[in-house]
Image (cartoon, rainbow, N blue to C red; front, side):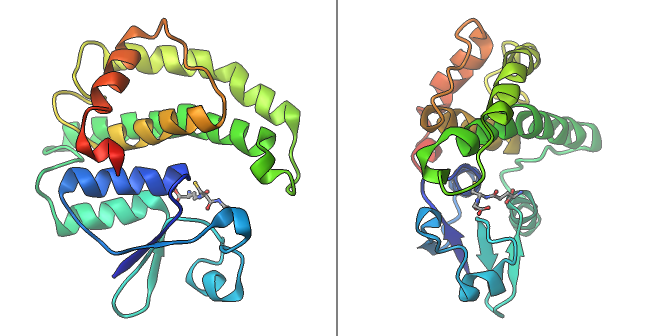
Length: 201
Ligand SMILES: N[C@@H](CCC(=O)N[C@@H](CS)C(=O)NCC(=O)O)C(=O)O
């Protein structure tokens, strides 16, 4: 089993943070997407979408989509639980994880894609970055209220929602996106999460 990863990319980071929180160590292969290494015929046989991360299993089959990979590991290793422990808690964790990805992570990723010199060779649309950025403050405010005074995004223990939000906030640095400092709950959460060993994964 191995994971194809690119250190600076947010979806691979989400997976690495999750694995570190679970205490799972899986061999990692770096694939530099800035050098076109995800577009080689060999890599495209592993993931025709040409994206990272990819989990290659011992039989050579591959799983793509970071969340599907995370759910696969969660089923193999239920402890410590990172998607809740009863139906309602599991639904809440997934709800917050989706909120973090759809409304925050994806906006930051869109800003990065449409403005960074890394993707200068792709069809960048500055208006798409502006549109993504315009919706970010409201998304952050909503999430800030949901986090409230909890230690973690979905309560008092780390979940997959923390992994997604942490990867998004780290990516915001690369994308030159300023996170609204008035979102005090999120700022406190971010500062706390950075003290966890998983944040260095
Ligand atoms: N929905 C996919 C998104 C994967 C994705 O977009 N990965 C980015 C890195 S964060 C990538 O590989 N981009 C390069 C490309 O698509 O060419 C997932 O969650 O795994």
